Image (cartoon, rainbow, N blue to C red):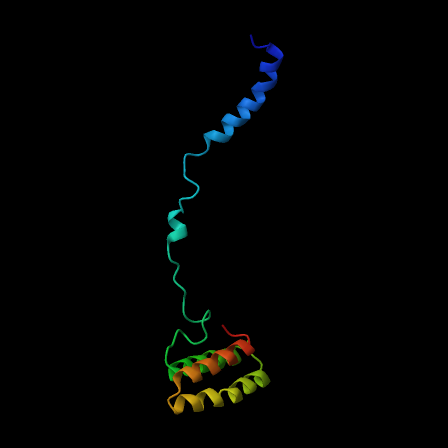
Length: 116
């Protein structure tokens, strides 16, 4: 025969265990539809080359961005001058057909001056 005090003491524990098992009915290992949806990455401010794959297009797009930045006051003229002076190396590489080298040099410049 079960003693009543033991049953009374076990009741809250039993309620807690049952509550933990009731859950919401969803499988926590199944990703939500939003988790698997791909989010497009916009070109423009998030990528200062506009997603260009050729060195000439990437350099032109970056120059457009820094020109807009200096025109709007987001970039001071002395820093603009340093950036444009540093673009001579990737421009020379691009002119000689070294696309990958020019893109790497441009990426280094963008990072150095805080552009994505």
